[in-house]
Every structure is written in structure tokens, then in C-alpha cells.
Amino acid sequence: MTAAVIEPMATGECTLAARVGGWLFRYRGYAPLPLLLFPLTAARPLTIEWWLAAMVLVAVGESMRLAGVAAAGPETRRRTRAVQRLVTYGAFSWTRNPLYTGNFLAWTGFALLSGDPRFVSVAIALFAIVYGFIVRYEEAVLESIFGDDYLAYKHSTPRWLPRRPRPMVRGTHCWRDAWRAETSTFANYVGLAVVLAAKARFPIL
Image 1 (spheres, rainbow, N blue to C red):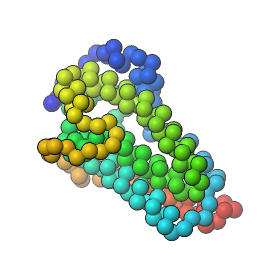
Image 2: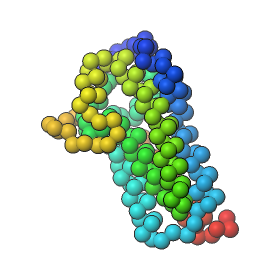
Image 3: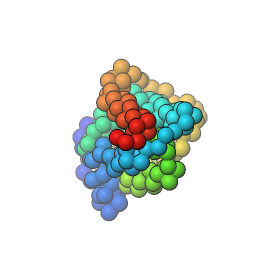
């Protein structure tokens, strides 16, 4: 399923929620930055079990992101409403938003590294607000471009919680491009984990 041209904006894209979501969509790469302030200033010494639990969440989240990028291609990092094809296979057959679900797990994992359970609640609430608006915008865009094809996909596939599709939907994946596209994300994760570990080990920093 392809779209050769950018379709005009539909009514759904003109709602206040969609307009807010469109703005957040363009700057979504900066959304996690406020979350760094708390763990960097309040990180506490953690047990190895706590660290492992947090890293498992981050790893599972990034695996979902990687699978999504492999299916949809590096254009998932776009900042405009231009969409060339509707991807409904692979990770996208389990959930309509595998990259964002992956982000949620990663956010939660790093929130755990603050050592303060209250901050996990803050991270979840912030995610729900930011990505709630973004998804409303994206769904309006996809409905504008792909029409009934997207509505059928939307009806059969959950928005957030992954669900095994029946039948399984398969398609082409480009894992090499996905790994390349996610290189900066990997680097950010490693850098943040190192900083948080140093902060927990040396609270004076």
C-alpha cells in the first residue's frame, strides 16, 4: 500500500488534540530530556537486582523499537506527515505503535534507575500525556492518507499492548538499516546508563 503524494489535511488533523500532537511529534526526540533531571540529581545506590530489572525493560523496549524500524524503515524517524506506505506486518501486526511502546519500556527502565518509585509514576504520566497527543495526530494523518485500509488495520490491531496477530502477518525487514538507524539511540542508552551508574556510585557528583 503506497501513497505517491501528500494528501491534504483532513478534519481529524485540525482538532486541538491533533494540533498539539503534531507539534509534539516534530519535537518528540526532546521529550525524554526533562526526565533526566530527576535521576541525575537524585540517583541513589541500587542493588544489582534493581539494575538488572531496569536494564531488562530498556532492552525489551529497544528490541521493540528495532523490530519496528526494521519493518517500516528509517523513515520512522521522520518529522513531517509524509508517509509512503502503510506498514501492517512484523512488529506493527502486534501493536500499531511498536516504537512508542518500546519507548515506554525504556523510559520506565531508566526511571527505575533513579531509585525513587515516585519518579516511575511521573515518567509514566508524562509518557501518557506526550504520546497520547502524538498518537492522536499520527492516527489522523494515516486515516487521511490511507483511508479504509488504515481504518481496517486500526480496528484489528491494538494501539499499545501487543497482541499476537491471527493469522501472523509477515513482510520484508531490513535489519541492517535498522541497526544503523538506531545507532544514536544505542549510544544514548549506554551514555545515560554510565552517567547514572557514576551518580549512584559517587553521590557527590
